[in-house]
Length: 384
Ligand code: ADP
Ligand code: MG
Image 1 (cartoon, rainbow, N blue to C red):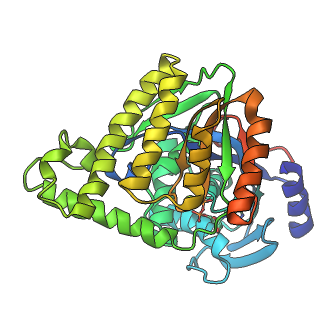
Image 2 (image 1 turned 180 degrees about the horizontal axis):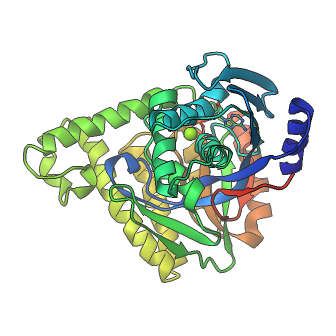
């Protein structure tokens, strides 16, 4: 794939002289869902599916972008960064460029090819991978230096403000700073993080893509963000907290919150505790305990946060009855996208064959399976 992107660059922009290339993985969250925007702990890994960006500086002010996957070209100038309604993919790059400008940096003209094999809209955060790839590349092309955490925050602002999705900071963090064979335990409030080695014995992570279109997902997502902010504002009248994840005993608010907002808030508080227990289990090589927490997380996302769907529940229910599976849950925002399954590797062929047939019978389509390894975050090189 990387070579194809470089070839495409030569095709579109004439040759490959003076190029920089960045490879940024997608991510899968092992546990800690829908709590990054409430200052909670999350535990993602970066996975071996990548977004590649190859680019070079221009001597004029032109910004020329080419999407390998969409086979589309977009051109503007460094002084003219505007939201695009027809080339939406360009917004994830333009948003990052705009954030560099907002910091007072002079952004040069440039030409970039972007592309990769992170499935789009499946909960593996192709969007964050595009943003971080663009940001790392832009640093190389412009000579602007930035600490990784500063770039991570910048990329999140690009998605929040330019693209218009109220995502938390987990995705950009995971795709930039993950480490191979480790999960990243991140405190989304303080941004402290540590690596937890993945000693999974004969188990691995399998992603099952529901292939369901997530048409409603961004409106439901923004609705949940608002609901928990409402709940937090009420709780703040009784307790000195900045985030729901700091609430010790959520049960005292049962009658002070609406039934719906209480359920949402309870998910956030309990999920946060689950992440810390899960991280300990992983450190102590307690795979069974870790898997159980994955199931509990899914149940909470289904019943309390209500961001699951029939397809995701079907995959989790099947997993529960399949010997060889240790745990399973939806990963990412939900309402479609992927389930992450912790499974004994030798049973994967049987699992995929049986699930595929049953799922097809139930929903009329086949799910897609990605057996993933945990890999390092964003990486750059300047080889043609
Ligand atoms: P995800 O869960 O994958 O992050 P999002 O809806 O947040 O889903 O982001 C997907 C969007 O990111 C795509 O619609 C596209 O605009 C952009 N994107 C993802 N992958 C690519 C790619 N390979 N090339 C160009 N743009 C991409
Ligand atoms: Mg995204």
